[in-house]
Length: 222
Image (cartoon, rainbow, N blue to C red; front, side):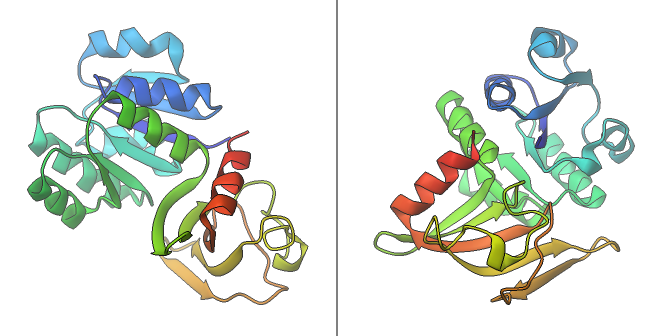
């Protein structure tokens, strides 16, 4: 089961947290407003009141162990920046931040956001579907062909590349594998050999036809 941290449980964060939960993920929700925490408490795994800009408070709720964190703070941009920086300090690999302007996007990326999204509810639901499907990002490389960053799930984790169905069933090519090292750094293996052993938590860079990628992503969500 994938684990997510959603910080800010207002108009964007609450539907995101609930949609991720409905998709089968474990969600930790944080907000400084106790009324918002109480409103979502019964709908997600963990809901807590905390100062998200405090690395110790984040560590206490297990932020360092999540697959991705989404910063959905409302009007307090300073708090959003400090929160992204705190998550980066903890070593959270995927940090998605809500943004309203191009200037905010640039600032958030400078302090550690790996992805930014704009408001509001429908965007939250689309983001939930993307995260739950383990697709972390996608880039169009030509008409009808894209690259995606995909978090390895139980279908490939523990297998050699030759034993997966990435090419035989889905028609996808594996370009590279990013892996977290024990020291907190990251390694990248480009064009891995057929005997390369995949691990849980690996991020795979896959390329293929958009229709095949959509089918693959949809299957990962079930």
